[in-house]
Image: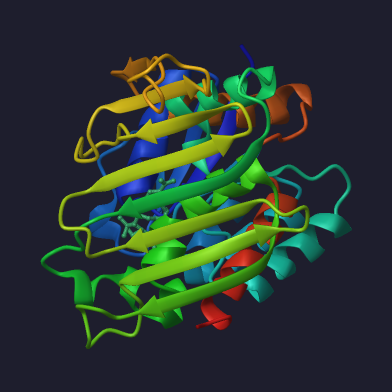
Length: 335
Ligand SMILES: NC(=O)c1ccc[n+]([C@@H]2O[C@H](COP(=O)([O-])OP(=O)(O)OC[C@H]3O[C@@H](n4cnc5c(N)ncnc54)[C@H](O)[C@@H]3O)[C@@H](O)[C@H]2O)c1
């Protein structure tokens, strides 16, 4: 198996997770890791750096994995692309649309660039099943969606880098809600009309929002509502996809914290001729999952791009630009 020699920049929670997943994959050889806080660098048997440029320059590598704060993502991505390396970067693709467009420009200047963003939710088992069900047309066509993705903030929420907008670019919507937006975009298409209420409903003294409600519409009339929340005191993930001949409901999501509940997908077929007492209570088909392979599938897709030239399918720079255009509208098209 050919080894993809890789440097990981940013060794916080995600950097360590990516390291573990790449080790488990077997097709990666981690050459170096880097973190500005050298004390965060675990005792891995690889070269260690506190300066990301030095880390990229001094190692013989094929790929760079970016797991830093959002602010520095575009600088590292553009630098690594210009050096000819394949790049995998965590979401969000920068702090705002202009960050993402900067990466797109560099991407388009390169010959055969490889760039993938970590929208891992597309690889959750319930989401893969929903995609297959929609593609089968068993339930007809999806016409609208309703999604809630919420968490409970944290004790040190106000101090987290995520809530300092000069570093993060936005609050809970950009941090977590973007995954739900990405799924809605994946299933319904690009939303061109958006209206939102983006608020600080509880954390009044931070710059980043703790709640965002949006109504979104595609050019062909599909509608969605999205609620992204850092004040959902009991963690919640729910995405309902309403189709012409049935209905899909994704509930719960397997994450490392296990706090979003068991991951399930249920579907129901429309039956308007159901016998008395059964109308509106169609047979439920439910699948439950007890493992999250999203990170593994994601690293495999990146590996196939680097080694076999397979085009990136999920999390392309073009997905990133579309998503950040929508995020931009969510933040600016207020009620
Ligand atoms: N796909 C997902 O579901 C998911 C989940 C969590 C986080 N993320 C994303 O991953 C990224 C990192 O999040 P995290 O939770 O690991 O945060 P974290 O705070 O745990 O880690 C970020 C690390 O980056 C380091 N860093 C910051 N600037 C740096 C620089 N210039 N050079 C080198 N290192 C630098 C910090 O010291 C820190 O250790 C964010 O963009 C976040 O949005 C994605």
